[in-house]
Every structure is written in structure tokens, then in C-alpha cells.
Length: 334
Length: 194
Image (tube, rainbow over all chains, first blue to last red; front, side, top):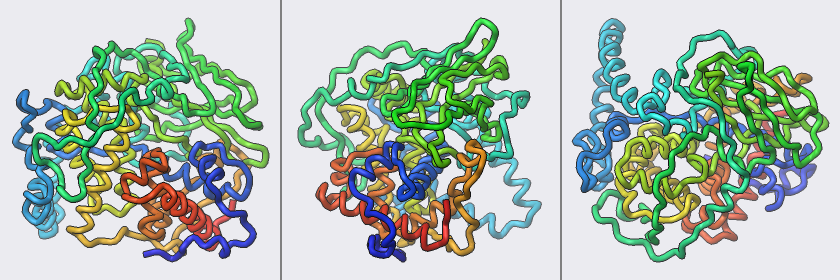
């Protein structure tokens, strides 16, 4: 599979990637031409892993209705998925096995047959996943009240690489984000640190039921944490304690969104504030026309009732990408 | 796409304990929040590992996670690590079933993946396409690939990755160093320019 073994001697012109450089790469603060390609690689990998995958029918059912009993039993459609390979035919969950059979069946269908069958399947799938709030046409908050606000939104329904510089923000486009959210609350930068474990690890407990592959499945940490009562959540901003730049956005009186951010920890030549529809299709992705060293920008083109995500990107001297901010989520002008 | 940062460490506002408690109470909205928080990374990890049906496998992972939430108690980092542990285990299981190697795309057929742009905003979008990313990852040795993806996508620590892969922290550090070197060499050897 591999063509390279990572031998640094293959590229004598590069300094080795040491542990410190790796940490910088992972933190998004790596500088220098030597690390530029790796920085882009890291970023691209992360971008490629930002889209929320569509749930399987079984998971959609669980997300929509939960497990069927207080004992945690699964709905019939979901139960077949969690028993693990050992209990499944050929190691596959039933519905996945069935899907393989369906694929074989589809291979034998003509175009008209596929189209006709596809309409029915699409309708059924839409119903299930839509009920779970995963499909892009249904913002999760529509079915779960205020809870949508703090869920990490999907940047795009497909891989986010679908964003293109040739597809700037489409302000007047269709709006599927009417989630009713209002405003934005910024999380303090100490969030992550305050969540350091307060318990002492103990050996893992044996699960009450056998659900996983015996040999490879890890058991979870078993130390109990007394949970606090669920808090009412109206926040709409991604925690950003690990982000080099703190971005905050808020509505103004004039139906505008004013964003401010902190100075980057490393010298940059430009801050670029980007905006996209929180639950859009990625085509409305693009930079706002700030493009300077200013630390604030007022977005006057946001459309009322539309949920947006904002994020600041930076450019280093020489053109390389620099530190970025947290994402700020806000529903405009409601 | 502009360079990203480590994935969001929290599903919402740092109230992980409350969210976990809600999820344990079989509240679907809490499960959905957990899913939307971690499923992208899990799916990305599985996909770039060459999983046969990454999205379906991701669903399997979260069904297992939700079903076993009652057995979990701990911090948010521990939860994230646990989810990726389940994901990696499922991946291993799937590989046993399918004996399938990660799909690769020859880079010589791929377009140039980096270009220098005068417009920083445009340059921010000049990034590796998904297929190219998968191709690069697919050409890494399996252990290096696992370490890099768990570190980059899972945002997991050296110790967490070591636990998942059953190796020492020192071995993980060596694997990630060699992995990043391999990526850099691969990109350079293919004529990628910045």
C-alpha cells in the first residue's frame, strides 16, 4: 500500500518534522515554507472530515425516537445494528446485508426501473433521516426546539471541498435555515480547560449487554461523574478555547451582524472574515469584503432569518495561511 | 477551503456533563447533538482509512456508542477518545470482513493540488481535493495513517492514540514523525508546489 516510509533523507532540503513542528501543525500555527505543504495537508484532511454523514435508517430511527424502552432496548430496526459482527450473518448488520442485496438487484435493473425505484427509496429515506433532523432540508432545531443551537452545524451536506472561490456568498439564495435562533453568545476561552477530568480513571466495567466486537472493542471509562442538571442552551457559538483567534459576532440594531476578533498570536498580513450558511449546501461559502488588518467587520448583507457561520482566516507574510478563529454561529436579524 | 483548526472539542458551550446526562436519559436531541459533533470526524477518519462504507460504519459506531452510554462516565476528551476507539475497532472488524485495502488514486492523474494565488481568499480555497487526500492517506503505511488521522481528525493526544492503537506513546511519536515526513515527501515527489 505504501510508497513511502517517511525517511527524511529522501528530502535532504527539508528539516525533519520534529514533535514541536507537529504540534504546531496540529494547532494550526505552523510557520515556514518547510511546513507549508503539511499545513495544507492537515487543513485539507480536517476540511474533508467536516461534513455530517447521513445516518443509516437504523440510526435515523434512534435519533428521531430514541431507544424503545427505558431499559435501553433498541427499536427493531436499530437493534440489528448494534449486536456486532459476531452475531450477524457474515459479520454484517442485517440492514447492511440487505443493502448489499439491493445493490445487486439494482445492478440488474434498467434505467427506468432505477428511476422508479429511486423515487420511492428517496421518499422513505427522506422521511427517516428528516425525522432525525440530519437532512439539510431540516435544520435540527426545527424538531428539537432550542437544542439545535449548540449542535455543531454541518458546513455542507457533501464534502466541504465543494466550496469554491467561484461560488461567492449567495445572499439572496434560497433559505432552508429558518431555525428561529436569535443572536449569539460567545463562549469564554476557558471552556476546554475547565472541562479537564474531575474524576480518577478506574478499570473499565463490563457492559451490561454484549453489543460490541469482543476482541477489539474498547470499554468506556467507568468512573461515574455526577451529572449536573441539563442547562437551557441558547448559545450558538462554537467553543474556541483551542483557537488562536477568538471571534465574536452579534446582531446590531440595524439588522446587521457585527463581528470582532482578537489579534492573531503570530504576525499576519491580513484577516479574512468568511461567512456561509450554517446548514447550506456549501455554494454560499466565501469571504466577506473586509480583507485587511482590522479586527472588526460589520456584515450588512446577511439575510433575515438565515443562520450563518462566520470564521476568520489569516494570511501570513508570503501568502501562506495562518491561524484561524473559532466559528461563530448566528441567525440574522430575526 | 482555508486551513482548518482542530475539531471542535465540545458539542456545546462546554456543558458536556449535562449533555451526557441528557443522552443517558435517552433524549434523542442529545444523541443528535453528539452525532453532529463527532460524526463528521468519525466518518472522515473511516473514509480516509479506506472503509468500505464509511457513512454506514459511522452509523454503526454511534448506535453502539448510544447504546453503551450508560457504561460511560468521564470527561469530554475521554468521550471523544472512546468514540474513536469504537470507530477504530469497527474499522478493524470491517477490514477483517472485507480484506479490502484503502482505495487509492494515483497522484499522477490528479490535478495540481497547490497553487500560489495572489488573492489570499482564493488561495485559501486552493486545497487538496477529497480524492487527493484519500490518495495521500492511502499510500501511507497503515500505522502511520492511523496515527496521523487520529491526531489530525480526532484531535486526540499522543497518549489517547497510543491507547487506541495499543502502542507506547514513544512509538506513536515516531509513527507520526515518519508519517508527516512521508506525506511531505509524497507531495514533493509528485511535484506539488506551493
